[in-house]
Image 1 (cartoon, rainbow, N blue to C red):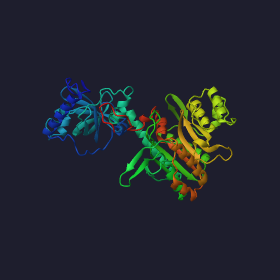
Image 2 (cartoon, one colour):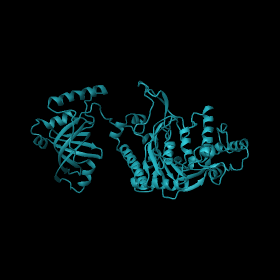
Image 3 (cartoon, rainbow, N blue to C red):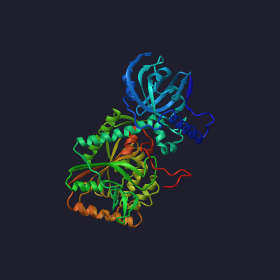
Image 4 (cartoon, rainbow, N blue to C red):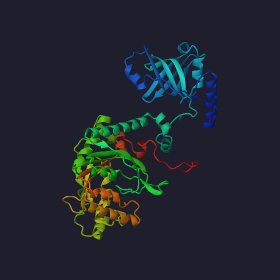
Length: 516
């Protein structure tokens, strides 16, 4: 048996030569009356469906059921002059094509030399449609016994003979279309991503939440500490920002009378790139009137566990070799207590920033000279000494007011706010507040942010006067929640990098490419 896994001639050693050879086949197809780029094909079944439906077909037996499938040729093998075997891949998986000269030429009597044309004018990567019946080979391979075929799309470039998914990661991201063709596991990641977001939307719908879209182009970028992307509207002659959060517009909806709203959408932040950061990413923000951050903790558990159960069928998952138990209730502990356990420092006891910094340096903290308050120093201690250790789901509670400009003051702990962040596998997955509803307090905090921005802090807020006007009309007590969809998908697909779960992540141009 001949195995034709790279069907181009051995002399075709460059992409240009391969492309030229395939272009010649395009012309040959036209000459024999075949359309190299068809308009449609009636598909009745998919590969996975056939594999399941005919799983009990005995070796060597046939089933007369007529099927029509379509997909991409992955491998081609010939056996003598009258028999060929192709592996056909569609969205659901692979199935073998059993191509016998006599059967094919009988089914395509009006197409002379149909078998020879199929064998000689197709290549791995071409998309074809076939009709036929089912048979299982004596070796146990379920196959479509082809009676008719049509070329649907002639590919001009070859598939990689060996796709180096681990060593050539950048190429996988740049040519995601090829990555998806040759790596079924990658297709499964994006299928699961779609199922995860569908599950979240379905659950919130069942709880009475409604999704309302808010502007991507904004006159003031607010709702988070982040550097925005800036653009310009020619007709209006004004600078605009790509949104860094959906928070402030969703809160306007709460002011307007909606009690349960959310938006699942794209966010843009002009900041660094890492395995857990991409300039364009997806979040869901949820706001519920008459609720607080304790209610949001329960909602967070419900959203994530429902998605895990719907998509994976279990709450015990594995992430990068670590077993993670998502069974609620999850651990709840304050930032102060976590830092004290990790460093021995009790930040409630320091009277001056100078004293706190001296103790922090003795405890091994670095790069803290720019911390201008004890609250910020506490957060820095948490990020350096605690955050990477939070592997199992953990709600970290009660943050310093200095880093939480949109959260309500803690009802019993001065200097803190009612806020939690959820950490799983050492990274933040969700963030929530008892939302600040006092317009006077909110103005003071936003003006403090504006002062920082004027002093050169590119991540600080401006004062959004319209948002403050909305608050002055009165916003009910509200719990707010944000979940990073990309990080949640990373967790539920065992993906080490955010680029693995974003179909087309932003990349620097390769040498020789024009800059965007």
